[in-house]
Image 1 (tube, rainbow, N blue to C red):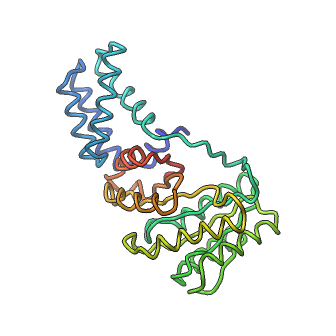
Image 2: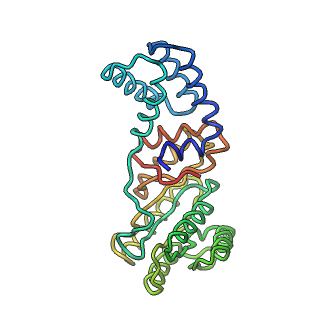
Image 3: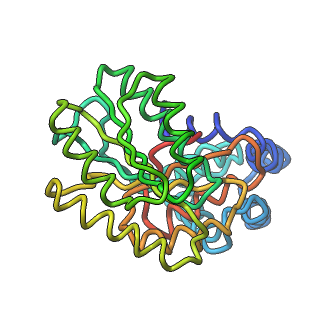
Length: 281
């Protein structure tokens, strides 16, 4: 399924409040004019896409309309869809082909965003493609986090590397990479702590994990994914900025998209930070 298809499927509430409103606005007009484009811009902003990104999208649409001489308002929906898709940076990740083994994925994000569930879903997807998967429980600040990941690991029959609660997260990652090498694992997925992003210590801890990971295996983590909660809308942007600065995130996993009208925020966040969306859940 293409990105727009995934986005629409996962965004039932946003779709009903944003895309359906745009569709109604378009159907009410026969021709494309400034009034219609302004109305669409307002709808995008109200859908939490963000002022800057909404304005950019409308400018792109205007240029397309002028250049390709569109007049019929019905053409506008397809143009807008194409421009929304084009505003997302592309990624070149292939789930069934890893350039190195073990392929190390580090998953970051504040508590409550759905990191652990996202890790479980990724693990299952890789399993379905015939890959050997391992989890690393590097969120050692919460005993419940280790237990939750262990439940998923047992359910999916995936190897788990863990230490006691309160131990050094970087040590967990080092041991996990060594174990993944020894056990011929295809992909290692690392869970990390997610205390509030205002805690400077968390960012320093994540940087340390990256350094230790690189010592254990050069070039790792190969992929760092930031999990964002769609229900926080544009507020997720400030979270994202700090994580991007601290851990050089490569892309986004957007969770809880079907339970919010703020899912449009991912368009602005992805565009502003130049981060592709890897998964929608």
